[in-house]
Length: 158
Image (cartoon, rainbow, N blue to C red; front, side):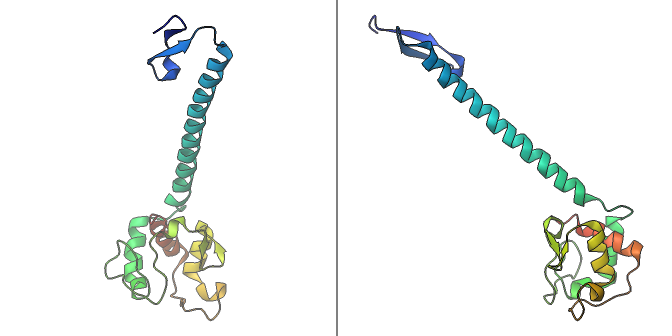
């Protein structure tokens, strides 16, 4: 080192001792530190926003008021929904006539027509022919309570 430089330890500058020119304006160093700290705070805010958003999505779909996911899984098997749909976690549910239901809890639409909300999913399960007349999904005589249970299980599939 010559007399034009000195060692300066700066934690925001990654904690190392770095040669710094004497007489260089401190504003330069302040801008570098401010940029680095700002980037860290910005990234932390984005991560936090993502966690909050994902937590909100999970909570919205994880429960259907009055629905029981365990019963819903059994009902999907009992009504033989797997003869037309692939449904993860349901035995023998490997049909190919209807769409696969894996990930239905994170889709935007039900049947390509209705916003994916618990009420709309229950409606689609109960009365698909009223939602889409002439569609391939039949009315199976599912009760309101059963539709809630089925929807509760389907919303676990993300």
